[in-house]
Amino acid sequence: MVRLKDIAAAAGVSVMTVSKAIRDKPDLATGTKVRLRALASAMGYVPDAAATGLRNKKTQLLGLVIPTPTDPIYSRVLVALEEYAHQWGYDILLGHSLGKVEREEAVVRRFLARRIDGLLIVPVYRMSHSSVVFDDLRKQKIPVVLLGPSAPFCEGFSSVETDDLAASALMTRHLIELGHKRIIFLAGPMNAPWASDRLEGYRRAHREAGLPVDDQLVFSAGATVGEGSAAALHFIQENPGATAIQAVNDLVAIGAGDTLLNQGIRIPQDLSLVGFGNVLISEFFRVPLSTVRQPKFRLGAVAMDLLQERLLGQVTKSVRLPAELVIRASSGPVLRA
View 1 (cartoon, rainbow, N blue to C red):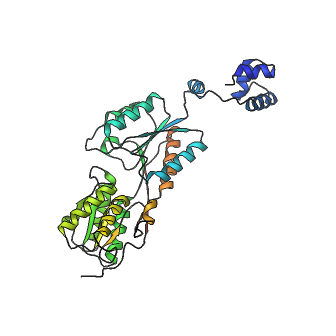
View 2: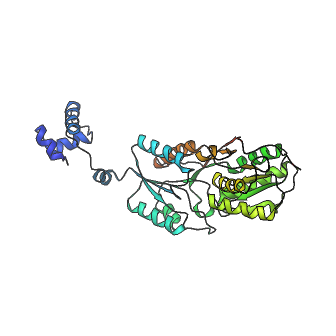
View 3: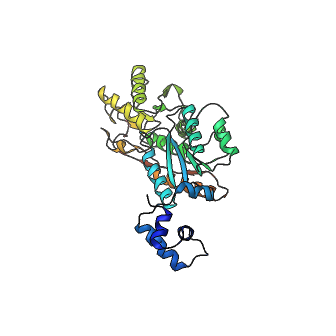
């Protein structure tokens, strides 16, 4: 490992002179700085980030907490976050909450021990109105941006999210315009604001169209492929006489769709099926899935913009981004009464 004294010896100057050149100090001649930096680069010198952080009280580290890396929703978001962090000279520490409060708290505390400059986090939503770790983040005045809607336990932090309610209502209206009047909704975890908003969007579109909101058509389905499959078996057994299914996300829709097709139910001839999120697999499902395209890269870019503003001490506001429909083969007009 090349050290400052190695560069000083090669250049025939003092270690202090090399240090000043590396740190671009104004009391050193420009020509000398250029020469010493070029020599340092040629010798393969890498500055000690920890030592630099001790001097300027910045580590150039950002913490990022997501539920799991296997959730395809976060792939494009992660690309944006890393790209912007790289441009601004930050490294990202990645942690996974696995949807567990205690795991989330442990990850955040590890990040705080590493003296992160800021935090990006998909909160683990819970019914409690308070959280010790989020209280600590407030007390320590750590710049935080929520990747998702706020909730009572994490209020006071800026957030960036999709306008889930409006997008869900848009999808329901699409099905209603195709002639569907009995639409099943596969609901997500109700402690998650995004899931509640998508259910409310479904209900709002019914009310606006003058259609009754039948809660017997709402089935609890969680957020995974397996939970979507289980929900499909449930409503097949109950036979509610629906002509369309709207799922809280694409994974649930794909799980339900796979089960329906395996049961001999045709999509969309017997049942139209739509999702939410536009993950990559939705386009290549057995019947390409109509869904809501979330602006995933844009979500990550805006989150980094907000965090950068917070790092500069600026006051920021939460951002809600619009989404758009992607109509594919899985939704069609009603072919039966």
